[in-house]
Image (cartoon, rainbow, N blue to C red):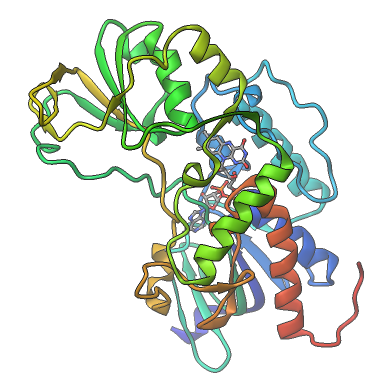
Length: 360
Ligand code: FAD
């Protein structure tokens, strides 16, 4: 209904790294907080998906490239949970730059409105925006692949997104599925208190090297090619492999990485089975199988290509130039997020205020 719509220039959806970077650059480019742009975030507080990382995750266990534009992270405390440290940094950042973040404001849909407007619907109301920057990440969309028998398993099944602590698995037999850094981290923790089996779909690719910004740029370029072609971005690990981290070195030292098995063929009531007759009993299956872009709210815009992805030119949706996606595909990392936020903010400025003042 028209009367309750709030007219605004730009809505940013999501306040993780990518959304905050976008909001910062919108401010720098002269958009006035609250009056000309808002950020709608589904969470109860600052931190984006980092709020939900499991409590034992420390910042020395991740690649650790987290600077938001204009305010360096410094040397973050690696003794406290990453979830707390990053949430604290993001909260300070929002205050320092007076970013207009509304919470909790989960956006349920973005639709075509009248005239040049996109309608952004949330429990806070509906905004009629001239441009939208989507920065919703992947955390709300955990991915579990299908295997025959998956519904018959009588033990516990959970995804990385549900994991809290190894203690929940003490004394159990746990199958950990997945070839990424999260799988290795959780496998290492759980194997200290439980008997574990590690299975991956492909042989894990240990790069033997630390993750560097150069490596990061190569990865970004690889994913960029996919998204330009309208393909789904694909998992980051499929392009990064497993770089050397504290977690990997510890896992190797403890022998946790030995004895990996290829993915099973089916799941039974009490375990997992391979075609050749091999069987492993399990009390729990932990799916460390990644995430997909959390973009269901964009479905009314019908932007998906036959290949399954949203085709982008830089950050702009090719089929809907009023929409930018940041933290999607090539910018779905802390490296890419800052640059993407700047590109999206500039794209929006060029669309809405062509020739406008530049306060950069
Ligand atoms: P998010 O941080 O996920 O923020 C998205 C925000 O949008 C959230 O606040 C969410 O609630 C909100 N949202 C979602 N849907 C809606 C909606 N419909 N309406 C309103 N709000 C919505 N990357 C690295 O580069 N380096 C690392 O070291 C690293 N470590 C990682 C460790 C783990 C355990 C995991 C799981 C991922 C890691 N990543 C790392 C990937 C990391 O998630 C991204 O790099 C980055 O944090 C994503 O930022 P973002 O802003 O795109 O998304």
